[in-house]
Image (cartoon, rainbow, N blue to C red; front, side):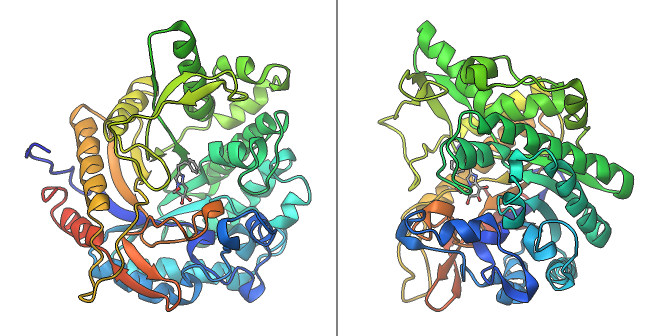
Length: 449
Ligand SMILES: OC[C@@H]1[C@@H](O)[C@H](O)[C@@H](O)c2[nH]c(CCc3ccccc3)c[n+]21
């Protein structure tokens, strides 16, 4: 890193991110209903080591301690998600006030410590009762979701001023309906486009509802992964276009441009439906910001065997890789922010997730966790973000993934993304070197990069 001024705009929002099922534990406490992840993790063989979110980081009981720790680290913001089935155990109908109260108290505690809450309404943990009714495959889910969002807006809007409807519709569809690695574990070429479309309709319906009851900001969180062709060959170029449309354009084009990328029909063929214009009107509600989750890039080649996108990732021998086999490529964040700026007319962006799982050394006698690789990852990506801001991107904040080591979905607890180490046997929290480093970055508004 060449040393240059990396001070960020005034009021730049520095924080960390988590999600309900990954940290809370107590999934059925106080009247909460089961989610599809509760079912998934208790189905043998679906998570590494049979790990579950039954306890996770016990945040549902330790939330005050965790907020105090954020304040001690000088963090200014905190992105968390609401477990839909705590608030509406059946996904719709009767509100469980004890579930709602957990989030209301959490928000008040954050505000009392000068920490800005950013609240995600859906981070993959769909109420099981709605999955029994078809879940994201049932067109009615658009109003089920809007009704749930309405409950949250009326309860928290004003204290929460930054809402996100969905976390990463691409992962929900690709993981939950196409390849089946994530809940609800379907594998269907025909279901995937339907799930995508109903996720986007639900997003639009919630934004539309917010415009009638809310007074602050609402956006959509997407994971974007820039695709770089492995060669100039026509086949690799075409595969790169397909992969880019499938992971990146498939979600933001409908929201900002009112249409899906034309590559979608090429990818899904007869499985790609034609949708009514009214749906596209519903989906393309104006947003106040995009939430960008950035982790890595993909050098992309033609891969006829890689159904259905027929695009494959080319390993970069000279690169550093994380424990989840993602290439460390900070330039991809700069490039992705430039793509957003140019394609969607420079909308405000919050980096809502950025981080890495590395094999961390154990907690030393002196209480240190010397996670140098994570410090380097954060430093380079915050620098890459600054380069995009200098080039004109309207980036308003950065949430490091994650505050805590936590339940990494089907990978269980084996992968540690936290700035704070969790000893799962004792639930002891230990800030890693990366937490200390990030505290200095936040305190200096980016100058101490
Ligand atoms: O994998 C780390 C984090 C998850 O813990 C978050 O819940 C989720 O929002 C999230 N998204 C991504 C990038 C998209 C992705 C997710 C899973 C598998 C492949 C890519 C990375 N992460």
